[in-house]
Image 1 (cartoon, rainbow, N blue to C red):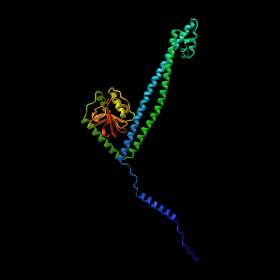
Image 2: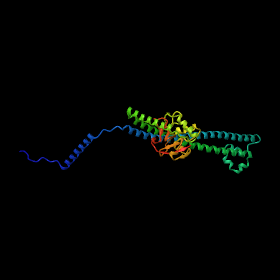
Image 3: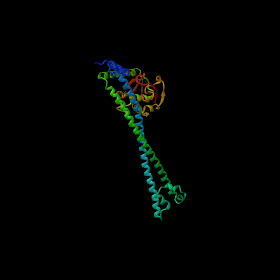
Image 4: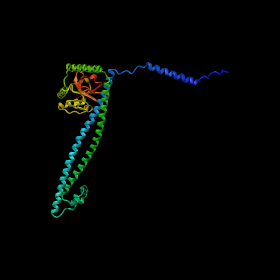
Length: 346
């Protein structure tokens, strides 16, 4: 006999779970169907990102330049100290030889003074402080001992100073390596972004840059101002002779430059020494706060941390080494990418 029992109904909990899961699946499939594929960044977006990376690379470059300058300075100081120590050791040996000659003369005349004999086999500091010893030596011997003592102290101080500078040099070299990696990392990231552009997009960016360069050059030629001084004129002329020279981070010329490398090189050609880094160059002369007061050849600084510097070219233009991938050129101060902070008249 057939059963008339009603089929078992699914529980409310099971229905709820299944319904929720189905709804979620429908929603996800709907989103997947409607989602637009990820779009490739536009030429302008890539340029903006690349410009930001180049700015960060230049910040790291100026820190690299500072560490490099410190390293070079320490190496020169250490070399000088080592030369001084070597000369001092020779002088000390001569003094000891002279004292030994006195001892030989005393021996030939009847024996060496016991105090002098004791000194020759030990440190004079232990005996000069004893009045009884000094009383037994001649005035000439006492003077010789004092010179030896003074020279030994000088040599000890110089050796200690050289040792500290060597430690500082080691730390500076480590810092230099880190800064170099930072610069290289930023430049590598920028190049990867540029490689995402088509040849047509790259050509368009290059054409835009060339148009801007020609426009800036016309502005300079049409509004040539008066140089701030004879040395400013000479520095500006030197920099002009390098238009078209490639930017290379850490370079100070004459075949490549970074921003502060160009300005320091240009003023060196005018017979004026200014510091190596952009931040240090802010103290190279008289500060000019207003853009309207700038004259040709003045140093001009950009960005709040002052990591970029160029030479004022007149009519709102700057002559500078912009960034990796570019050459020394004129450019409008309004398109540098960071605000003008102030100028410095050297």
